[in-house]
Amino acid sequence: MTDYAFPPPDQASIGIAGSRKRYPVHRIYCVGRNFAEHAREMGAEPSKGSPVFFMKPADAVIQNNAIPYPGCTQDLHHEVELVVALGSSLPEHWTAENAMQAVYGYAVGLDLTRRDLQAAAKEKRLPWDTSKGFDASAPISDLIPAAQAGIDADTVLSLHVNGSLRQKGCLGDMIFSVTDILLALSELYILQPGDLVFMGTPSGVAALQKGDHYHAVLQGVAELHGTII
Image (cartoon, rainbow, N blue to C red; front, side, top):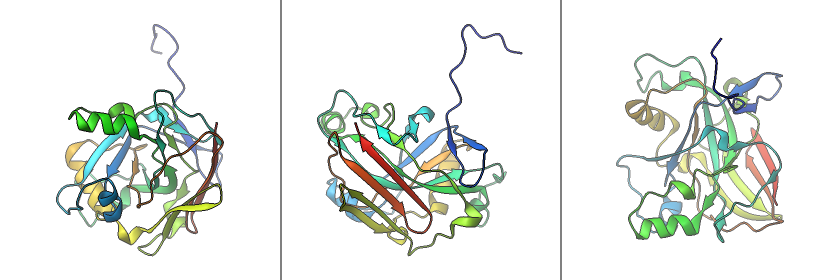
């Protein structure tokens, strides 16, 4: 048994629908500008070149329905996303034909963003990790095993805030498919069971205020409710 200098933190994990087991989170990869209209609202023209990636710490996941408003920002934004969870069936050599066998399940999540910090960093051409990788910045639903999910290009991803529709898009609107993203990530990183991939957001990102209630839906698959406190 390893003798640590102090007790290590608990393993970050999320629930699995219909199971008492929990899914241990290894890393969180996120895809930027994967919906054309969102790319445009962020001031960029969509491109089918190479996908843009950033990361959040594993313990940014949160399943408590009370989400703390983070410090150092006056402009917290929501970004509703399909989340893909990788399991143990990872191929040794990734191809377009075998990439999807690595998918353990799906969830709906929010990529919370301190937009003012991101904008300031972009203006100075600096990294914007602090705008994305903060505590509780990845609210997520329970995982739905892939065999039970049945998602396709027509599956709708949506977010309501205080009962009003903020974001809505079909998964078929993604510039890069799940297979595209997994192949690109596999070239950059050694993907592991427990890796989550936030697949990008439709247009309509906007600010959340303290007291706001949100309802994120991956149609027919998963739902996520919460309040900003």
